[in-house]
Image 1 (cartoon, rainbow, N blue to C red):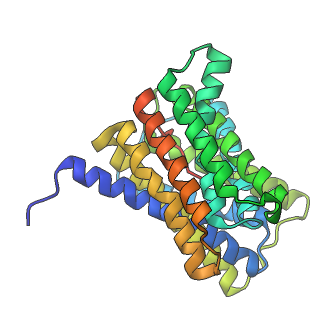
Image 2: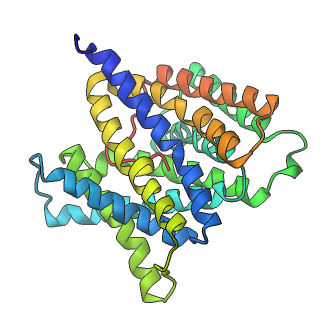
Length: 300
């Protein structure tokens, strides 16, 4: 059997990563039903994922990180923990598909941050993509929007903003480092920055039941370590633009998982809004050359 061409293989790897990232909301909701708090789910997710990533590093060479660069990686770990914590909190209050869709506002927010901080005015095509994405979110929120948990929507939008800041700073913070090395350290710092304070103030509960540990393991493996590895493998084959497009399988898969396992309804308005958001992401990627996911990134 002939191996798949690099482009096809890359698309499959990144689409698989998007499907894997889509399980985060489901495993998080199951963890909540098992009595696992957001702090425990967040900290254990990144700690276990870091162990998996460091374990994988035993089979391939890595690069040393200068001590002076650790501050940058720790900051990126803190941003990642903040963004992921907001997403986990949001997906416990609103449907997981909608929480994931709100996260996909991040390319538009990266555009606005770049405009506001760097003064780079976006093209008309990029502004059109921004308007399309915002209209899609408004439509996906449904009518009347008061039927949704307002705090959950705000947390979901906050996770998109946090990820946009993470992406805006990520390239500079990780410059000169091997992607896999940066990923391992950022994930490690994210886990430590959640678990250490929680343990210090007596807020860390490790007495989880079987369902709780299984859900946390799912978050660490299928929601973090596996998709991050797939994205890094895929982006080398197809580049940032096609990666950003292929990753848009994440919101619809998350919505389908929520409908199948959590009995969350899928309305025509949400479907139409989701299509507009994803269309905006694709249009924005083509207009800007593709918002590249930082190599140490996690979608949530």
